[in-house]
Image 1 (spheres, rainbow, N blue to C red):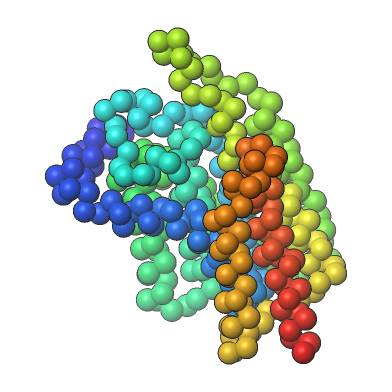
Image 2 (spheres, rainbow, N blue to C red):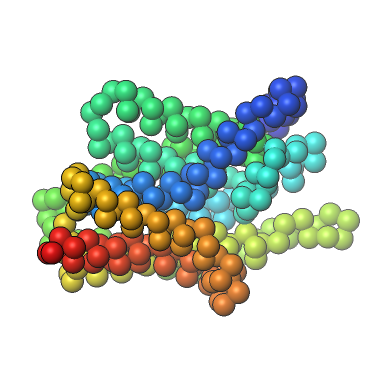
Amino acid sequence: MDITYLLWLQEWRVSTHDALTPLFEQLSLFAVRDLLLVPAFVYWCINKRSGLYILFSLKLSQTINSIVKLTACVYRPWVRDPKIIPAGDSIKTAGGYSFPSGHTMMFTPIYGGLMTMTKNKILRFVLLALILITAFSRNYLGVHTPQDVIVGLLLGCLSLYIGKLVFDYLDKHPEKDIYVMILAALSGILTLVYVTYKPYPMDYVDGKLLVDPVTMTIDAWGDSGVFATFALCWYIESRFIKFEAAGWNLKGIIICLIGLIPLHFLIWNTRAITSAAFGVHVGKFVEKSIQYIFIMNIWPLVIKLFSKK
């Protein structure tokens, strides 16, 4: 039934001459690239705790995604049925196995985390609409089945809930944060060991390997593996940098907006360099680690220095 649904969407897509394809492609691309700028800005400028909560929930969600996805090993829709033809260039960002949706488990904690920050009903409705529309886009583009997206939504919400429990606990026991950092780091490292050395299906069609399991683990190096980097950056900031959010004022907004420029550059331009230098797996880890080091250590230090002036 899931493939039938995707074929129906595909027929609708063709009949409308891909009218919505560019929009949905941009929504999906924004979710895995530029959307990280949003919690970074929240962390730097608006509310340090809220930004950290969203980033923590995001890394937890991505770690859970790596575990479930690389345990289930569900093939992409077009592998299961060659009649499925992904729309536009969406297949280029649809790496790895299919279940659950990695895109969904990235944008759900971010948009959902932002919803917890505001009581404005209109803004909360917009954020909820973005979650649902972006989730639907993964089906419309033909890169995920409905169950991929639904489970991704549920696990993303679960990550937010766990993050809330953790940060509510730390509000009462701030001295216990080191234990959370250690657990986060261990979770990332152990998940990386698990997905790297576990056995994978080796299915062949006409003598050709259907899906290379080695390439399926690349995303995990940049998702679950970087949970350890996140924990280290959190420790460094909380023990040594100790910056305060720049604040919702002209000076604070300007310095934080300036910080988004190099972060945007790092997100879009470091992959080729790190892959060439370290290989695709370690390179992915280094690429994502650089982003979190910048978000949690480098720019907070800049903000602290400018705040003193």
